[in-house]
Length: 400
Image (cartoon, rainbow, N blue to C red; front, side, top):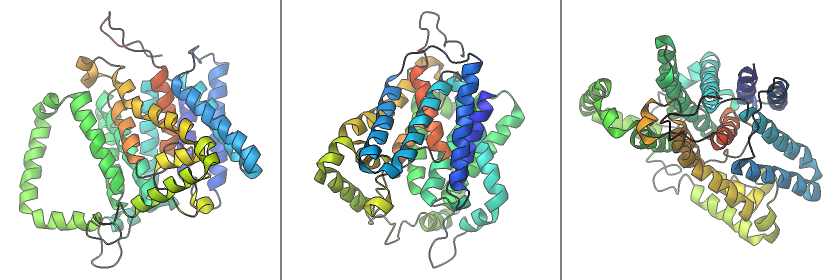
């Protein structure tokens, strides 16, 4: 029941950007998350585990958001309090659900998001995957999401579903999860979310070299067959394939091409840094939750790390960034290297790596308004409170 409530809360945030019902969906998601935490307490499922470093850091962030809001802008006290309450509920839930089950919940939410979009916006997705000759690219934006948010949600979702396919014992579930992951990747491509593709590549490298093992990957028969087919098709249709991806990713575009400064992001990052260093109060204390929004500062920072600094200050913000940056290493340490390929925790580090790389280009890392941001906090806390491997016994700790 706890897992169902958590999954439902994450799923409802998929609709948070829709006009009219969006705020209501966010409130309902918070209610469900509170229900999951309360249910865990009532059933005595909450383990007595000391507060972890990420929890302490994010709690400080939440309290600072509320304090700054009370001193600077009382209208934002409510939303800052919602963030702090959400963090409290997540801490409770993280002590009631194992890391394996948390990742499984994420995979189920990712599949639900894919199915929802296939029902509602499948025609737009198909149209976006076939770019028109000339004119602007028709980027895929289901349910009112921006292309960057599409890449963030479905790029992360593809990793969660592939992990579930690897650990599942049921053939039908494996096929469904692989199919859902492939469709998610198509959504990312249809949105032309290039930062998400880069983050997926980084996650794949971590998976191949540090989790599954390069030697094991190249020894798989289906990988060898796939590589041969890919090479043949690539050579036979290299011109068409190259032209298609150049168009979909707008490599030659003046506004999004290779010479565009990251689609103008570098200039936006410079503006964000200028604001940070030219305001001593913001530099030390931050401006509070959502104080770096385009409606407040006049532009989008297009980077989670600059957003975190602007909203939390340099010192607390640096602590948040370091916690997230170390999390993939923490996840890898939960399993002995020789057992990672067969572990139920496989791709946890890859999932966290995706979030870290993606957040260089987008601003959703420390947020609660979409499924991936909410899941990232759940996974982050659960990773850090998870006991390490039992070295003497040569096996992982039993699932909580």
